[in-house]
Amino acid sequence: MTMPAQVVVVGSYVQDQAWFVARFPRPGETLRADRYNTGPGGKGFNQAIACLRQGIATAFVGVIGDDPLGGIAQAFARAESLPCRWQIRADQATAASSITVNAQGENQIAMNFGANEHLDPAFVRAQDDLFGGAKILLLQLENNLDAVAAALELGERHGLTRILNPAPVVAGFDATMLHRCDIVTPNETEFILLLERCVGATIDSATLTQRDDADLHTLARRLAVATVVITLGAAGCFVSHGENRRGDAVTYYRLSAENVKAIDTTGAGDAFSGSLAAAMVIFHNAPFRRAVAHANRAAAISTEIVGTAPAMATFNAVTSRFGR
Image (cartoon, rainbow, N blue to C red; front, side, top):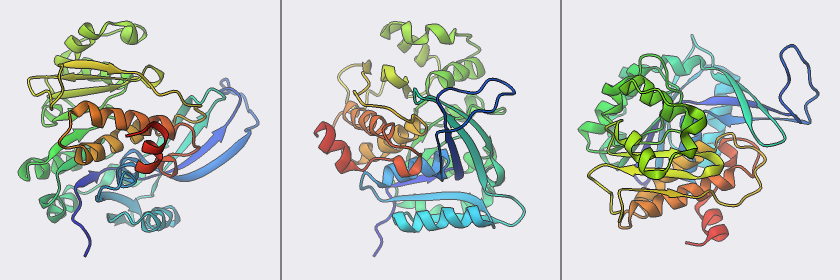
């Protein structure tokens, strides 16, 4: 018998295509790529794979086209033993992205969201049985917002902890939807956009990582979300709690990034969010900091591997590398 999903991920699938170059091309310039890679991705799918590879029963709800790329998505999910509820649309193409990665492991991404922008809210609501036995709902913003709202409704109805990775911060997303979430996991750019969109605060992105922890906590509290976890790339991550500290001894703190040899940072944020959801289940009796530390390590390992979904680390890989 298949174990009921403990984490439900509602999100996007994207077929990633990556070109690796010494530097980013200038406008109008053609550069020879050192190598090319294609594989399964999309924030939702990446996070589902990251969560599953921590050993936690995970289910994914998403939408693809009735086309060859959609077939690749289904085949990869089967190979990973990831239970999926696919809406398959004949009128929309499976999403695809173009990723350029430079020698420093930085990336630039262009994406056609394709079918992801046409996930039927009724299809999401029809997956009510998945939510009944779950503990955590994990969401992103690569789908149409009415589908995201439908997932939040189910999460609220079944009492799930609702985690939102607010990427990308799209038009129409506002404080009303943000406040329906228990935990948000923006990167620094998304954090600034949330402050602008939801509370009207303008922050200089160049100074964000230079702010002291007390100042960063004050900014995070303006979002009025119970827990804010800001991923800061090479600067690690920052956690800000409201009244519920989730077992932590302090209200806010920062964790440093792990020392790794990054070659491709694409998908590191997805590795963090997916592994965080899993670690909250694995270490449910421990302080929240334990789950964050595990997610921080899983994200670090993912940067040493080319690709997105295939680069997600397993639980054993994380604990073998960094200890428990």
